[in-house]
Length: 195
Image 1 (cartoon, rainbow, N blue to C red):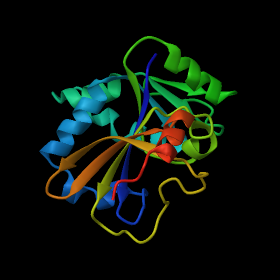
Image 2: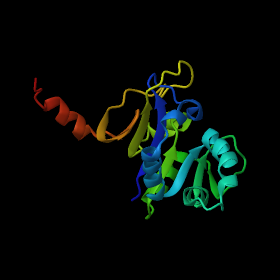
Image 3: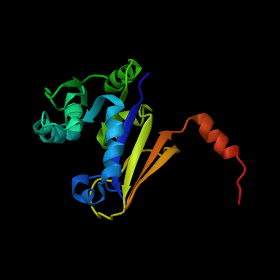
C-alpha cells in the first residue's frame, strides 16, 4: 500500500496562496534536499486542478536540460482531480466520478508513495473527509503575508499527530504530521499531564 504524502508551503499567518512570492528567500540547499527526497520517494503525483494548471505550464520547459529533479518531476505519472477539466496532458490521467474511491484504489497499488503538492479544495472536499492523506508536510516560513487562501480553511476540527520535524536554516521548518486515529486520540486523553 502506498502513502499519500502532501507537501504545502505556509506562511506564519497561515497563508498558502502564491508561495512562489513569499518562499524564495528561504529556499536553500536543505530545502532542496528535502524536496528531492520527497520527490524521489514518490512514484506518482496527485494534483488538484489549480496546481495542475500551474505546474503543467511551469515544469515541461525544464525537462531534458540535465536536471534530474526536473526530469523526475516531468516523468512521474500524474493524477488530476477536477470536475471542470475535460482533458489533461503532461503524463496525466484525469480522475472523474467517485474521485475519493479512485484515490483510495491508487493507494492500494504497489509502488512508491503518491506526492501531492499544495493544499486546497481537493483537501477540503475529498481528501480530509475521507481520511486519504497519510502524511502532511507543512513548510512553515517566518513571513506574514496578510492576504490569501488560508491553510485548511473550511475543514472540521482534525487532530494530527506530529511525525517529525526538519529545520532548514536560516528560517524555515517542516512539520510532518499524520491524522490521528481514534486510538491515538483516546490515548492522549488518558495520558497524565506532566508539569
